[in-house]
Amino acid sequence: MEHETEFTLLIVDDEKQNRLLLTELFQSEYKIIQAKNGQQALERARSHLPDLILLDVLMPEMDGMAVIRELKRDDDTRHIPVIFITALDTTADEEWGLNLGAVDYIVKPFHPSIARVRVRNHLHLVHQRRLLEQIAALDGLTGIPNRRRFDEALKQEWSRCQRNDQPLSLIIGDVDFFKTYNDTLGHAAGDRVLQEVASELRQCARRPGDLAARYGGEEFVLLLPGTSQEEGKLVAEKFRQRMLARNLPHPASPGLQRRVLRHPQSGRHHHHPQKQRSHPRLLSAGRRRLVPGEIPGAQPDLLA
Ligand SMILES: [Mg+2]
Image (cartoon, rainbow, N blue to C red; front, side, top):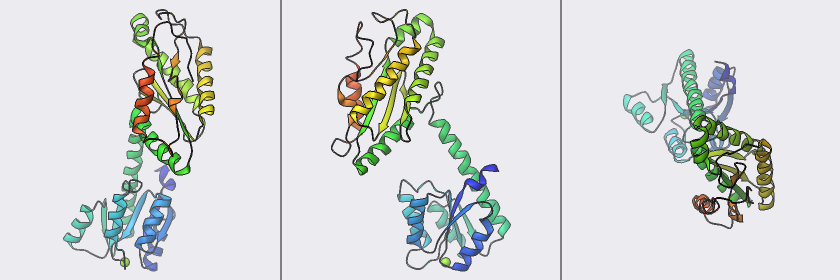
C-alpha cells in the first residue's frame, strides 16, 4: 500500500527492550513514536494523534487498561485504534481487552511477520474509514462540505476561537427565488446554479480554518474563524461581486434581474465566542434574519 509511510505508530511499553524490538519491526514502514509509561502514552497520543497505538498491558502505575479507558473517554483520541501487545495470554484477558475497545490483541512472544500483517490490516481499515468519512462530509452535487461537516467545523472553531480569544464570522446566504428558477428552467439548470455558487464561495474560503459549505437546499454558509466583522464584510462583498460578475439571469425573478445571494442584514453573523452565547444558537439567529429579507423587489445585494 502506497500510503503506509504516512502513518504514525505510537509504541507504548515500559520495557526498553520491547520498545526497541517493536520500533525495529515497524520503523521501515511507519513513523514511530515511543512512550515508556501510561501517562506519557496519553500525552503523546493527544499531541501527535497517531494512526494506531501498540499498547502494553502490564506497566507500573498506569497500566494499559487504564490508558485505553482514558483514550476512549477523550473525543480527540477515541477513534485511534489500539492493539494490545501483552504477555497476558488467557482468553479472559483477551476478552477483557477487546471489550475495552481494543481492535486486536497480540500475545507476547509474537511472530514478527504476524504482528506486521495485523498492524498493516488495521491501518488499511483506518485508510478506508478516512476515505468514507471524506465522502460522507461532502455534498454530492456541489463537492463542497455538507451541513454535517459544517456543524462539526462550527463546533470546533467556536471552541478554538473561544480559547484563543478571537472573533468568528459566519456568512449565511441563499439563492433568492430559487423555486421559481427551478420551475421555469428546470432542475438541471438549478443544479448548475448551485454548483456555480459553491464554486465561488469556495474561492472565498482561502485561509486554513475557513469553510464554505452547502447548508441544505439553496442555502450556503461561509465560516470564517478569527475574522472580524469588518473583514467578514469584505469577504461577503467580494463574494457578492464575484456572483454579479457571473451575470446569471433569472427570467422569472419578481423584480430582480439577477439571482443573488442574500445574508443577514445585521452584524448577527459576527460573533465573539469569548463573550457570547454558545454556538448552537448562532445559526438560528442568522436564519431568523434570513427570512424577512426574502421579499420580492428587494435590492439585489448581499447585505453585510
Ligand atoms: Mg510491560
